[in-house]
Every structure is written in structure tokens, then in C-alpha cells.
Length: 286
Ligand SMILES: [Zn+2]
Image (cartoon, rainbow, N blue to C red):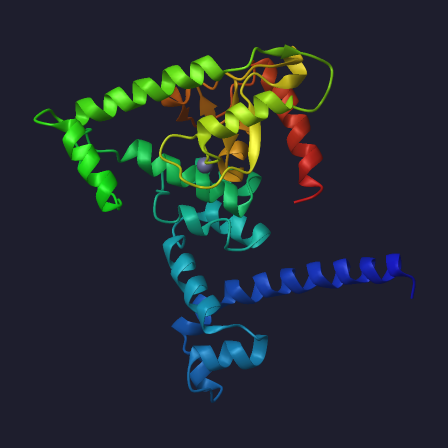
């Protein structure tokens, strides 16, 4: 068999296997409810699903848990039939009867990791209690550093000392910031890349995210302006970068403190067309 043929066969069998597994999963709640496994002489639903379909205990538990949560939500059930339970898992605890249509659309059009990132931001934004005036953080420091800091703080407030440090860092970065570059080249100039990585400390710049950066993102889209501006290029993790390209972040053109997730993309934004192209191009690979 030629390698291309071999590959095609594998893809075909693989997608069939996935489809049949989805069908099996959907039958589990009723099999469990009617205790069919017992009637057929198995010791438990796990033994039944394991021996007959090669399902792990974890898969059975997750399937029963998720399917129970969506038993009154037909929109989500449909997505499970089409795509399996993984994409629906992150949303089962926030989708309600009224919002299931909205969430079903998200689960249908996003990958599992995109749904996870989106729901995480949603929870933060939605359920955020009022910001306290001050919060406590813990740091592990070398004793010498801790002592120097205590001395520097003196009888003043930690907050003031930290503000001073932050201001100094901001000024220093501002001085080091390279000029923006207009070019046709698809490569970010090395100077700008170095600067963005220093500013972000190679960590996703989405507020509150601590994941290592994976992609440098243009909040003004290179295709629209053909320029590299250090103020509009940000280091992001994959999850957050995808939400930008799906048009699901509001105030993208402003600094990170203003970024917020939104329900739908703004289809009138010229970025939207570009993002559609980017997403369709990428979906072939992921
Ligand atoms: Zn992130």
C-alpha cells in the first residue's frame, strides 16, 4: 500500500472509530438507568463499557456526569452527538436553559481548548466579586533581598514602594522601546520581538494569565497596516490568541487592562474578515 493510501485509510477508520465511540457514549445514561449491564451479567457499568467498547472508567464517569447535566438541554445534546462530549465539558456548569443556544454555538465552532479559555474568562468576568482595595500576596525571596526590601520600604506602605518599582520599569521599557517599522516583510523585526518578549517576560500578556507565551499577536492586524508597532504587538498563549482571532475580545486596540471577552464578534470590524481567513487556514492543521 502506498503511504498516501495508508494514511487515507487510517484517517477514514479513525474518524469512524470516533463516531461509533460517540454513539456508544450517548447510550450510557439509559444503559445505566435501566441497569442493562446487570441484566447482561456484568458486575458494573464500568466492566460492561470496558469489555464491550474499550471505554475507561474515567470516560464512563465523565460521560455520565456531562450527559446528566445536559439532559434538559437539547441544543447541547446535539453538539455532543456531532462533536463528542469534550467540547461541551467546560460549559456544562454555566449553560442554563436560557443560554444553552449561545453556548451550543460556541461549543460547535470552537476547539476544546478554545472553549476552555473562553469559559475561564467568562467566569472571571461574570462572577467577579467587587475588587477588594488591597490583596495579600506571598513571595519567596532570598533573605538578603527580603531585608533590602524591608529597608527600602522603611515605615512606608508596600504599595508605594511597588508603585515606584513599576513606574521605574515602565520608564525604562519606554526608553528601550524600538520605533515602529513599516514593511512588507512577514517577519517581526528582531528588535521589536526582543522588546515585546522583555516587556512580557515571555508570559501571556492577557490580564491574569500566567501561561508561557506561544504567539506574538498584532492587535491591529499586520494585513491591515503593514507595520510592526511594539505598542500593538503582544505576547499571548495559544488560548487567548485564538479568542482574539475569533473576534471575541473587546477593546483589542487598547492596552491589556481594557481587554474583555464578549459574546459575539463585531462583524463590521475590518479585522473580522482577516480573522475569518486566518481561522479557516488554520483549521486545516488543528
Ligand atoms: Zn493567556
